[in-house]
Length: 234
Image (cartoon, rainbow, N blue to C red; front, side):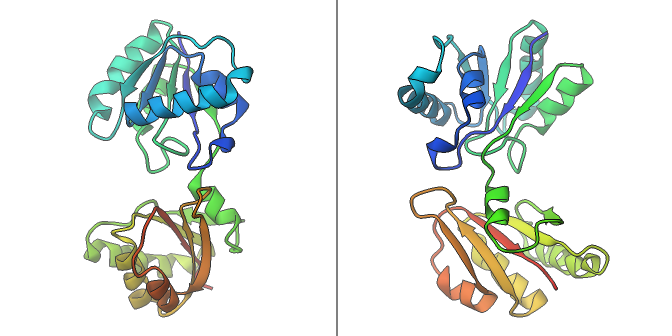
């Protein structure tokens, strides 16, 4: 029986790769990844930078595993695990399964008693939270908000109700083309509350910004990059 390794990769700065992650990525026979070209490029760069830390890399196969192929590829990967092949699961960046593919594979592997080992590392969620200045003892991660405004407003309104029971920091991921609609709906729901926005975390143009929602709508009027939005309702 092989082992399924859930491996976190850098979200920007390649120095955030762990030694343990390097050793796993360069020893397994199969890597399941969202984009084989992107992961292939990452592996070449890591091998160039950290060759002294690696044993002789094994030949490996990169298999596409994304939202479109998750259902069909899962059982192919499970067969390889049951045949004794170790597999590393990675996303394009950060920790797999956190708003990225992988849940189905991990769930089915656990059902079949396949060993699953997590190799922790970079996460935009945790990087944004720990630098935000907001409370970290309780937080609720909500992933990407609903695409349509109706369900998005309904979700935001429900947080006001639940906050009376659980005081927490709330966290969304936001793509650049959806950031302004999320901030606008938040202002409509909560008023002009303070908000923290992390942009392009660990990358060259990293930004940890804090201000009111009105200020955020001006500051990010032409959003570029990937965003993490954090707020509380105290």
